[in-house]
Image (tube, rainbow, N blue to C red; front, side, top):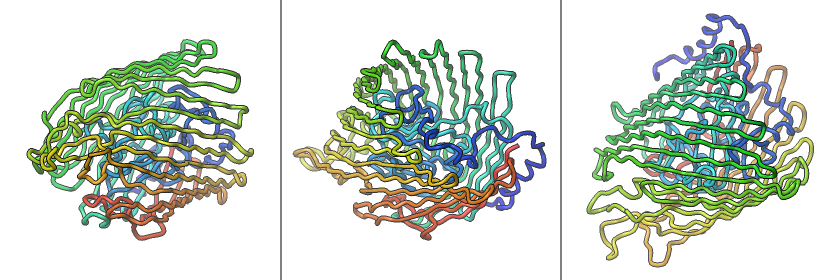
Length: 630
């Protein structure tokens, strides 16, 4: 991949266009009609992540930001992690060319970002082996994403443990919306990508699409860590098929990927997954959904090997009974993990283990009056590793008119112990910690979402989070060895999140976002943490985002963003930074778009991660690209 000439990427769409007749433009939404959605229409975008049932964004009583597929394409983002920078309630750190750390409401860092649950079409990509999300394992084409729903705040009642500080739900397009072909290619000094997708009808009721995405990223310059060979290249392919007949909808989809990390010969990641989902609408107010998936990933890096197999099945019933909107569900999951370490003496005991997880939940939204509703819910989850956890949630929502929503919530969430938390050992230095318990959160939230004017939308939320039993590394009772992982930290954090969108003219929109975070943590009496609070992460006190989208001229679209991120007060710390990105796209015809884009335009490079072992510097990058539909 590294030796493919840039011209090959730029010519690929033109070759595909000449090889196939331009019978029809892609039916999916494109970046070029981004501004055709009014502020009112944006407020009515259907979302599911807040209540696991369709509802307009304007009625969701939680801190929820929606990134549409159009916004992603218009921004120039080519990966999921970069697309998440569009959400003002998420904090994104680029660690090196392949790794990112993403959080909501704190605890960011490559090791500490373990409180954000992430799903792709209902399939969790949070690793229970390592308690994190490996973003480098997921490289679907951004053109296939319909929207990303980013919730900041606990989601344990509906999603279970590990949905502590937030939930990110990535939703891809229905196959019926991606008929025809699409080819995208980009080339720049640091990164090259190519994506091919083709969708075809199946009879009168079905449709399927197939895709292949190839990418190559050069290594980044030295940051807080020594200069490493962090080049990253690979491919991902897959399919999605949708069949709709009357009240039934069936979805089948799967992915296959392979990457090369260049650390040592043979290092890289590989995996595959397969998902099936059936939905039956019994009536306008009654829906049953059954979903099952299998997922397998394997990673090799610097003489370490780990793998994780997951099989998951769940059922959910949505039912309206009088003034009650009920959501009832249950699920079963089994995982088999493996960790082999030939780099040093740290190991899991046992090396391989199968775990079982069972859960059931119920949530009821009760209409107290025509404009006031109460949401009550609880989830019970039992695992063969950690026992039973109860995750309750109480929310109140007041919607006096279509343009105003006020809400408040009290929730409990937990991060359950991973095998690394309890069973990682290197005697006589580190001993297993069978008594390590779940990290706990009780969250208090309140917010406003509405349209102060016809041309402006605004969302403001405040939160106060109380944490207990956060991870520490403690010496033996006599102050010596062995060290054990324990639950020595407690404390609280609080902050404000706000974002707005203003339609200044028919051709010009401006988005603003602000997130603040203050933390106060302390060790419990008599406890010592030899990791010096490493599990608490390192977070800026504020993040400010500004974006603008403009139809500059006929067929010419400009999307530009500016972000200001506060300093990380750590040892060593890194200063705050201001950066900008921009994309200029020109639609030559309905089927052909040319664009140029740039990231980190204000500086040659800057540090985002303070990781002294892996952190490289994010650098300025420019690219040119084409996108063709046929």
